[in-house]
Image (tube, rainbow, N blue to C red):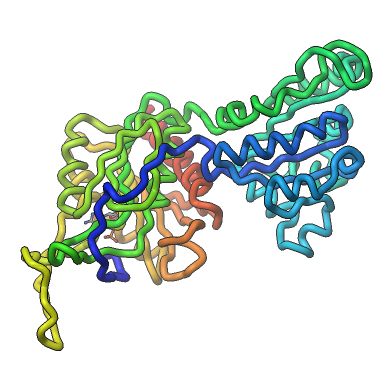
Length: 422
Ligand code: C5P
Protein backbone atom coordinates (compact mmCIF):
# COMPACT_ATOMS: atom_id res chain seq x y z
CA UNK A 1 0.00 0.00 0.00
CA UNK A 2 1.46 3.31 -1.01
CA UNK A 3 0.91 5.88 1.70
CA UNK A 4 1.06 9.67 1.51
CA UNK A 5 -1.38 10.50 -1.27
CA UNK A 6 -1.47 14.07 -2.44
CA UNK A 7 -3.36 15.91 -5.09
CA UNK A 8 -1.40 17.51 -7.87
CA UNK A 9 -1.90 19.09 -11.24
CA UNK A 10 -1.22 17.05 -14.34
CA UNK A 11 2.09 17.95 -15.99
CA UNK A 12 2.87 16.92 -19.52
CA UNK A 13 5.92 14.68 -19.82
CA UNK A 14 6.95 16.73 -22.85
CA UNK A 15 7.41 19.77 -20.58
CA UNK A 16 10.28 18.04 -18.84
CA UNK A 17 13.74 18.66 -20.21
CA UNK A 18 15.11 15.15 -20.82
CA UNK A 19 18.86 14.79 -20.92
CA UNK A 20 21.01 11.75 -21.45
CA UNK A 21 22.43 10.34 -18.30
CA UNK A 22 26.18 10.24 -18.27
CA UNK A 23 28.00 7.31 -16.71
CA UNK A 24 29.63 9.69 -14.28
CA UNK A 25 26.48 11.57 -13.40
CA UNK A 26 25.92 11.51 -9.63
CA UNK A 27 29.06 9.41 -9.09
CA UNK A 28 31.12 10.37 -6.05
CA UNK A 29 34.82 10.42 -6.82
CA UNK A 30 37.51 11.05 -4.24
CA UNK A 31 40.74 12.38 -5.73
CA UNK A 32 43.79 11.72 -3.59
CA UNK A 33 46.72 13.97 -4.47
CA UNK A 34 50.15 12.83 -3.31
CA UNK A 35 53.53 14.55 -3.51
CA UNK A 36 54.92 15.06 -7.00
CA UNK A 37 55.44 17.88 -9.44
CA UNK A 38 52.57 16.50 -11.58
CA UNK A 39 50.21 17.63 -8.78
CA UNK A 40 49.97 20.95 -10.61
CA UNK A 41 47.84 19.13 -13.23
CA UNK A 42 45.44 17.56 -10.70
CA UNK A 43 43.07 20.56 -10.36
CA UNK A 44 42.35 20.06 -14.07
CA UNK A 45 41.37 16.42 -13.37
CA UNK A 46 38.84 17.71 -10.83
CA UNK A 47 37.38 20.09 -13.42
CA UNK A 48 37.12 17.37 -16.09
CA UNK A 49 35.44 14.89 -13.73
CA UNK A 50 32.99 17.54 -12.54
CA UNK A 51 32.07 18.62 -16.02
CA UNK A 52 31.34 14.95 -16.81
CA UNK A 53 28.79 15.03 -13.97
CA UNK A 54 30.74 13.55 -11.04
CA UNK A 55 30.80 15.01 -7.55
CA UNK A 56 34.46 15.31 -6.59
CA UNK A 57 36.13 15.69 -3.22
CA UNK A 58 39.86 16.00 -2.72
CA UNK A 59 42.22 14.61 -0.07
CA UNK A 60 45.87 15.68 -0.05
CA UNK A 61 48.95 14.25 1.61
CA UNK A 62 51.30 16.65 3.36
CA UNK A 63 53.86 16.15 0.52
CA UNK A 64 51.20 17.18 -2.05
CA UNK A 65 50.70 20.46 -0.19
CA UNK A 66 54.35 21.33 -0.91
CA UNK A 67 53.40 21.48 -4.61
CA UNK A 68 49.80 22.83 -4.76
CA UNK A 69 47.67 24.62 -2.18
CA UNK A 70 44.47 23.32 -0.63
CA UNK A 71 42.80 26.53 -1.75
CA UNK A 72 43.23 25.64 -5.42
CA UNK A 73 41.45 22.31 -4.93
CA UNK A 74 38.79 23.92 -2.78
CA UNK A 75 38.09 26.40 -5.59
CA UNK A 76 37.84 23.79 -8.36
CA UNK A 77 35.94 21.16 -6.36
CA UNK A 78 33.65 23.62 -4.58
CA UNK A 79 34.16 21.51 -1.44
CA UNK A 80 36.30 21.41 1.65
CA UNK A 81 39.68 19.71 1.05
CA UNK A 82 40.74 16.93 3.43
CA UNK A 83 44.32 16.88 4.68
CA UNK A 84 44.42 15.38 8.14
CA UNK A 85 43.36 12.11 9.70
CA UNK A 86 41.86 13.99 12.62
CA UNK A 87 40.91 17.51 11.54
CA UNK A 88 38.37 16.54 8.84
CA UNK A 89 36.18 14.61 11.25
CA UNK A 90 36.04 17.41 13.78
CA UNK A 91 35.33 20.12 11.20
CA UNK A 92 32.88 18.48 8.82
CA UNK A 93 31.88 15.10 10.20
CA UNK A 94 33.68 13.55 7.18
CA UNK A 95 36.29 11.38 8.87
CA UNK A 96 38.39 8.78 7.07
CA UNK A 97 35.70 6.09 7.34
CA UNK A 98 32.96 8.44 6.06
CA UNK A 99 35.15 9.50 3.13
CA UNK A 100 35.95 5.87 2.35
CA UNK A 101 32.21 5.03 2.37
CA UNK A 102 31.20 8.20 0.54
CA UNK A 103 33.40 7.43 -2.49
CA UNK A 104 32.06 5.40 -5.38
CA UNK A 105 35.60 5.42 -6.78
CA UNK A 106 38.99 6.68 -5.65
CA UNK A 107 41.59 8.17 -7.99
CA UNK A 108 45.16 8.70 -6.79
CA UNK A 109 46.74 11.27 -9.12
CA UNK A 110 49.60 11.78 -9.01
CA UNK A 111 50.57 8.62 -7.14
CA UNK A 112 54.16 8.92 -5.93
CA UNK A 113 56.51 5.94 -5.56
CA UNK A 114 56.33 6.43 -1.81
CA UNK A 115 52.53 6.39 -1.69
CA UNK A 116 52.42 3.27 -3.88
CA UNK A 117 54.75 1.50 -1.45
CA UNK A 118 52.51 2.58 1.45
CA UNK A 119 49.54 0.95 -0.30
CA UNK A 120 51.51 -2.27 -0.80
CA UNK A 121 52.38 -2.35 2.90
CA UNK A 122 48.79 -1.58 3.93
CA UNK A 123 49.94 1.41 5.96
CA UNK A 124 47.47 3.76 7.62
CA UNK A 125 49.75 6.51 8.86
CA UNK A 126 47.90 9.43 7.26
CA UNK A 127 44.46 10.29 5.92
CA UNK A 128 45.09 9.26 2.28
CA UNK A 129 46.55 5.82 3.02
CA UNK A 130 43.89 5.13 5.67
CA UNK A 131 41.06 5.89 3.23
CA UNK A 132 42.57 3.49 0.69
CA UNK A 133 42.71 0.79 3.35
CA UNK A 134 39.17 1.47 4.59
CA UNK A 135 37.33 1.60 1.27
CA UNK A 136 35.50 -1.13 -0.62
CA UNK A 137 35.44 1.02 -3.78
CA UNK A 138 37.77 0.57 -6.74
CA UNK A 139 41.02 2.55 -6.67
CA UNK A 140 42.67 3.97 -9.80
CA UNK A 141 46.35 4.81 -9.52
CA UNK A 142 47.96 7.34 -11.87
CA UNK A 143 51.69 7.04 -11.14
CA UNK A 144 54.03 9.96 -11.68
CA UNK A 145 57.73 9.82 -10.87
CA UNK A 146 61.24 10.01 -12.26
CA UNK A 147 61.75 7.41 -15.01
CA UNK A 148 64.48 5.60 -13.08
CA UNK A 149 62.29 5.38 -9.97
CA UNK A 150 59.48 3.95 -12.14
CA UNK A 151 61.77 1.35 -13.71
CA UNK A 152 63.30 0.27 -10.40
CA UNK A 153 62.62 -3.37 -9.45
CA UNK A 154 61.07 -2.24 -6.14
CA UNK A 155 58.48 -0.02 -7.86
CA UNK A 156 57.77 -2.61 -10.55
CA UNK A 157 57.21 -5.30 -7.92
CA UNK A 158 54.90 -2.95 -6.01
CA UNK A 159 52.88 -2.28 -9.16
CA UNK A 160 52.51 -6.02 -9.89
CA UNK A 161 51.43 -6.59 -6.30
CA UNK A 162 48.75 -3.87 -6.43
CA UNK A 163 47.47 -5.09 -9.83
CA UNK A 164 47.09 -8.59 -8.37
CA UNK A 165 44.99 -7.09 -5.57
CA UNK A 166 42.64 -5.40 -8.05
CA UNK A 167 44.02 -1.86 -8.09
CA UNK A 168 43.61 -0.21 -11.50
CA UNK A 169 46.32 1.80 -13.24
CA UNK A 170 46.24 4.72 -15.62
CA UNK A 171 49.60 5.65 -17.16
CA UNK A 172 52.33 6.61 -16.71
CA UNK A 173 53.21 8.11 -20.09
CA UNK A 174 56.68 8.33 -21.58
CA UNK A 175 58.31 11.62 -22.51
CA UNK A 176 60.11 14.65 -21.14
CA UNK A 177 60.19 14.83 -17.37
CA UNK A 178 60.33 17.83 -15.04
CA UNK A 179 63.73 16.59 -13.79
CA UNK A 180 65.15 16.91 -17.32
CA UNK A 181 65.23 13.17 -18.04
CA UNK A 182 63.25 11.39 -20.75
CA UNK A 183 61.35 8.13 -20.20
CA UNK A 184 58.28 6.55 -18.57
CA UNK A 185 56.89 8.29 -15.48
CA UNK A 186 54.79 11.23 -16.70
CA UNK A 187 51.29 11.35 -15.21
CA UNK A 188 48.48 10.60 -17.70
CA UNK A 189 46.92 13.74 -19.18
CA UNK A 190 43.99 15.24 -17.20
CA UNK A 191 41.72 15.05 -20.28
CA UNK A 192 41.87 11.26 -20.27
CA UNK A 193 40.58 10.74 -16.72
CA UNK A 194 36.80 11.14 -17.18
CA UNK A 195 36.64 8.25 -19.69
CA UNK A 196 38.89 5.99 -17.62
CA UNK A 197 36.98 6.69 -14.38
CA UNK A 198 33.64 6.05 -16.13
CA UNK A 199 34.97 2.62 -17.22
CA UNK A 200 35.70 1.81 -13.56
CA UNK A 201 31.98 1.49 -12.95
CA UNK A 202 31.44 -1.16 -15.61
CA UNK A 203 31.36 -4.86 -14.68
CA UNK A 204 30.04 -8.03 -16.27
CA UNK A 205 27.97 -9.22 -13.28
CA UNK A 206 24.75 -9.13 -15.32
CA UNK A 207 26.20 -9.62 -18.77
CA UNK A 208 23.72 -11.17 -21.20
CA UNK A 209 20.74 -10.84 -18.83
CA UNK A 210 17.51 -9.00 -19.61
CA UNK A 211 16.22 -6.90 -16.71
CA UNK A 212 12.93 -5.06 -16.47
CA UNK A 213 12.57 -2.38 -13.79
CA UNK A 214 9.48 -0.38 -12.86
CA UNK A 215 10.19 3.01 -11.31
CA UNK A 216 8.59 6.20 -10.08
CA UNK A 217 5.08 6.98 -8.93
CA UNK A 218 1.89 6.54 -10.90
CA UNK A 219 -0.61 9.32 -11.54
CA UNK A 220 -4.23 8.30 -11.18
CA UNK A 221 -6.49 10.87 -12.88
CA UNK A 222 -9.37 12.49 -11.00
CA UNK A 223 -10.27 14.87 -13.82
CA UNK A 224 -8.33 16.34 -16.78
CA UNK A 225 -6.12 18.49 -14.53
CA UNK A 226 -5.87 16.62 -11.22
CA UNK A 227 -4.48 13.29 -10.17
CA UNK A 228 -3.62 11.16 -7.14
CA UNK A 229 0.10 10.48 -6.75
CA UNK A 230 2.66 9.71 -4.06
CA UNK A 231 6.03 11.03 -2.92
CA UNK A 232 8.20 8.67 -5.00
CA UNK A 233 10.89 10.58 -6.97
CA UNK A 234 11.84 7.52 -9.06
CA UNK A 235 15.49 7.91 -8.05
CA UNK A 236 15.78 4.40 -6.57
CA UNK A 237 14.44 2.69 -9.72
CA UNK A 238 16.50 4.91 -12.05
CA UNK A 239 19.61 4.22 -9.97
CA UNK A 240 18.93 0.48 -10.28
CA UNK A 241 18.57 0.86 -14.05
CA UNK A 242 21.85 2.81 -14.29
CA UNK A 243 23.64 0.26 -12.10
CA UNK A 244 22.29 -2.64 -14.21
CA UNK A 245 23.63 -0.92 -17.35
CA UNK A 246 27.02 -0.59 -15.69
CA UNK A 247 26.85 -4.33 -15.01
CA UNK A 248 26.28 -4.89 -18.72
CA UNK A 249 22.63 -5.97 -18.53
CA UNK A 250 20.04 -5.39 -21.24
CA UNK A 251 17.76 -2.94 -19.40
CA UNK A 252 14.11 -1.98 -19.88
CA UNK A 253 12.77 0.76 -17.61
CA UNK A 254 9.00 1.20 -17.32
CA UNK A 255 8.70 4.57 -15.64
CA UNK A 256 5.92 6.58 -14.11
CA UNK A 257 6.20 10.39 -14.31
CA UNK A 258 9.48 11.68 -12.84
CA UNK A 259 11.83 14.61 -13.42
CA UNK A 260 14.83 12.35 -13.95
CA UNK A 261 16.88 11.99 -17.14
CA UNK A 262 16.52 8.44 -18.49
CA UNK A 263 19.72 6.37 -18.30
CA UNK A 264 21.24 6.22 -21.77
CA UNK A 265 21.44 2.68 -23.09
CA UNK A 266 18.15 1.55 -21.52
CA UNK A 267 14.88 1.01 -23.35
CA UNK A 268 12.61 3.48 -21.55
CA UNK A 269 8.82 3.23 -21.65
CA UNK A 270 7.06 6.21 -20.14
CA UNK A 271 3.68 5.59 -18.56
CA UNK A 272 1.38 7.55 -16.32
CA UNK A 273 -1.19 5.31 -14.62
CA UNK A 274 -0.84 1.97 -12.83
CA UNK A 275 -2.96 0.34 -15.54
CA UNK A 276 -0.56 1.63 -18.23
CA UNK A 277 2.41 0.42 -16.19
CA UNK A 278 0.80 -3.00 -15.85
CA UNK A 279 0.08 -3.30 -19.58
CA UNK A 280 3.55 -2.09 -20.64
CA UNK A 281 5.25 -4.45 -18.18
CA UNK A 282 3.29 -7.55 -19.20
CA UNK A 283 3.84 -6.77 -22.88
CA UNK A 284 7.60 -6.60 -22.27
CA UNK A 285 7.42 -9.84 -20.26
CA UNK A 286 6.12 -11.58 -23.39
CA UNK A 287 9.49 -10.87 -24.98
CA UNK A 288 11.24 -12.76 -22.17
CA UNK A 289 13.04 -11.26 -19.17
CA UNK A 290 15.53 -12.84 -16.76
CA UNK A 291 14.98 -10.48 -13.83
CA UNK A 292 12.06 -8.24 -12.82
CA UNK A 293 12.52 -5.52 -10.20
CA UNK A 294 9.36 -3.73 -9.05
CA UNK A 295 10.74 -0.46 -7.66
CA UNK A 296 7.75 1.66 -8.66
CA UNK A 297 5.45 3.08 -6.00
CA UNK A 298 2.31 1.96 -7.77
CA UNK A 299 -0.97 3.45 -6.52
CA UNK A 300 -3.10 0.67 -5.09
CA UNK A 301 -6.36 2.43 -5.96
CA UNK A 302 -7.57 4.64 -8.78
CA UNK A 303 -10.70 6.79 -9.13
CA UNK A 304 -13.39 4.56 -10.60
CA UNK A 305 -14.77 7.16 -13.00
CA UNK A 306 -12.43 10.10 -13.59
CA UNK A 307 -14.45 13.15 -14.58
CA UNK A 308 -14.20 14.23 -18.22
CA UNK A 309 -14.45 17.86 -17.11
CA UNK A 310 -12.65 19.79 -14.39
CA UNK A 311 -14.57 19.24 -11.15
CA UNK A 312 -16.04 22.52 -9.89
CA UNK A 313 -15.90 23.56 -6.25
CA UNK A 314 -19.51 23.37 -5.07
CA UNK A 315 -20.05 21.46 -1.82
CA UNK A 316 -17.97 21.30 1.38
CA UNK A 317 -17.41 17.57 0.90
CA UNK A 318 -16.38 15.60 -2.14
CA UNK A 319 -16.29 11.82 -2.23
CA UNK A 320 -14.91 9.64 -4.92
CA UNK A 321 -15.32 5.91 -5.52
CA UNK A 322 -11.97 4.15 -5.92
CA UNK A 323 -11.20 0.74 -7.42
CA UNK A 324 -8.12 -1.44 -6.94
CA UNK A 325 -5.35 -1.28 -9.53
CA UNK A 326 -3.79 -4.51 -10.84
CA UNK A 327 -0.81 -5.68 -8.76
CA UNK A 328 2.02 -5.75 -11.32
CA UNK A 329 4.48 -7.58 -9.08
CA UNK A 330 1.98 -10.30 -8.25
CA UNK A 331 1.02 -10.69 -11.92
CA UNK A 332 4.68 -11.11 -12.97
CA UNK A 333 5.32 -13.51 -10.13
CA UNK A 334 2.40 -15.70 -11.31
CA UNK A 335 3.57 -15.93 -14.92
CA UNK A 336 4.22 -19.51 -16.06
CA UNK A 337 7.62 -18.56 -17.43
CA UNK A 338 8.46 -16.13 -14.66
CA UNK A 339 11.76 -14.31 -14.27
CA UNK A 340 13.64 -13.86 -10.99
CA UNK A 341 11.22 -11.51 -9.19
CA UNK A 342 12.31 -8.77 -6.78
CA UNK A 343 9.87 -6.48 -4.97
CA UNK A 344 10.20 -3.48 -2.69
CA UNK A 345 8.42 -2.98 0.59
CA UNK A 346 8.14 0.62 1.70
CA UNK A 347 6.95 0.47 5.28
CA UNK A 348 6.44 2.97 8.07
CA UNK A 349 6.62 0.33 10.84
CA UNK A 350 7.35 -3.37 11.51
CA UNK A 351 9.67 -3.31 8.52
CA UNK A 352 10.97 -6.88 8.45
CA UNK A 353 7.75 -8.54 9.52
CA UNK A 354 5.70 -6.73 6.85
CA UNK A 355 8.34 -7.31 4.17
CA UNK A 356 8.50 -11.04 4.92
CA UNK A 357 4.71 -11.29 4.73
CA UNK A 358 4.82 -9.52 1.33
CA UNK A 359 7.62 -11.80 0.07
CA UNK A 360 5.52 -14.87 0.85
CA UNK A 361 2.15 -13.45 -0.22
CA UNK A 362 3.42 -12.31 -3.63
CA UNK A 363 5.69 -15.36 -4.13
CA UNK A 364 8.85 -13.26 -4.63
CA UNK A 365 12.45 -14.43 -4.93
CA UNK A 366 13.68 -11.39 -3.03
CA UNK A 367 12.32 -8.31 -1.29
CA UNK A 368 14.11 -5.04 -0.50
CA UNK A 369 12.56 -3.37 2.51
CA UNK A 370 13.00 0.27 3.39
CA UNK A 371 11.55 2.44 6.08
CA UNK A 372 9.62 5.42 4.72
CA UNK A 373 8.36 8.40 6.65
CA UNK A 374 11.89 9.45 7.66
CA UNK A 375 13.13 12.52 5.79
CA UNK A 376 16.75 11.33 5.52
CA UNK A 377 16.08 8.11 3.58
CA UNK A 378 13.49 6.43 1.35
CA UNK A 379 10.90 8.43 -0.60
CA UNK A 380 12.09 11.72 -2.15
CA UNK A 381 15.46 11.40 -0.42
CA UNK A 382 18.91 11.02 -1.99
CA UNK A 383 19.82 8.24 0.44
CA UNK A 384 18.33 4.90 1.24
CA UNK A 385 18.91 1.96 3.57
CA UNK A 386 17.64 -1.54 2.81
CA UNK A 387 17.04 -4.86 4.50
CA UNK A 388 17.08 -7.48 1.75
CA UNK A 389 15.29 -10.77 2.43
CA UNK A 390 15.51 -13.83 0.21
CA UNK A 391 14.67 -17.38 1.35
CA UNK A 392 16.42 -17.72 4.70
CA UNK A 393 18.97 -15.02 3.87
CA UNK A 394 19.00 -11.51 5.22
CA UNK A 395 21.35 -8.72 4.12
CA UNK A 396 21.64 -5.17 5.32
CA UNK A 397 22.61 -2.43 2.86
CA UNK A 398 23.62 0.45 5.06
CA UNK A 399 22.41 4.03 4.54
CA UNK A 400 24.18 5.48 1.48
CA UNK A 401 23.38 7.46 -1.67
CA UNK A 402 20.81 5.61 -3.80
CA UNK A 403 23.22 4.88 -6.72
CA UNK A 404 25.49 3.08 -4.26
CA UNK A 405 22.58 1.21 -2.64
CA UNK A 406 21.41 0.20 -6.14
CA UNK A 407 24.80 -1.32 -6.95
CA UNK A 408 24.88 -3.32 -3.72
CA UNK A 409 21.33 -4.55 -4.30
CA UNK A 410 22.12 -5.63 -7.86
CA UNK A 411 25.19 -7.52 -6.67
CA UNK A 412 22.97 -9.48 -4.28
CA UNK A 413 20.46 -10.10 -7.08
CA UNK A 414 23.23 -11.21 -9.49
CA UNK A 415 24.64 -13.66 -6.92
CA UNK A 416 21.25 -15.11 -5.99
CA UNK A 417 20.10 -15.29 -9.62
CA UNK A 418 23.26 -17.13 -10.67
CA UNK A 419 22.88 -19.62 -7.78
CA UNK A 420 19.27 -20.29 -8.86
CA UNK A 421 20.31 -20.86 -12.49
CA UNK A 422 23.41 -23.05 -12.15
O1 C5P B 1 1.80 -4.30 -1.63
P1 C5P B 1 2.74 -3.15 -1.74
O2 C5P B 1 2.23 -2.04 -2.61
O3 C5P B 1 3.27 -2.63 -0.45
O4 C5P B 1 4.02 -3.80 -2.46
C1 C5P B 1 5.08 -3.05 -2.90
C2 C5P B 1 5.73 -3.76 -4.04
O5 C5P B 1 4.74 -4.18 -4.97
C3 C5P B 1 6.66 -2.87 -4.84
O6 C5P B 1 7.70 -3.69 -5.36
C4 C5P B 1 5.76 -2.33 -5.94
O7 C5P B 1 6.50 -1.96 -7.09
C5 C5P B 1 4.86 -3.50 -6.22
N1 C5P B 1 3.49 -3.17 -6.63
C6 C5P B 1 3.08 -3.44 -7.93
N2 C5P B 1 1.80 -3.18 -8.32
C7 C5P B 1 0.92 -2.64 -7.45
C8 C5P B 1 1.31 -2.35 -6.13
C9 C5P B 1 2.60 -2.61 -5.76
O8 C5P B 1 3.90 -3.92 -8.73
N3 C5P B 1 -0.30 -2.37 -7.86
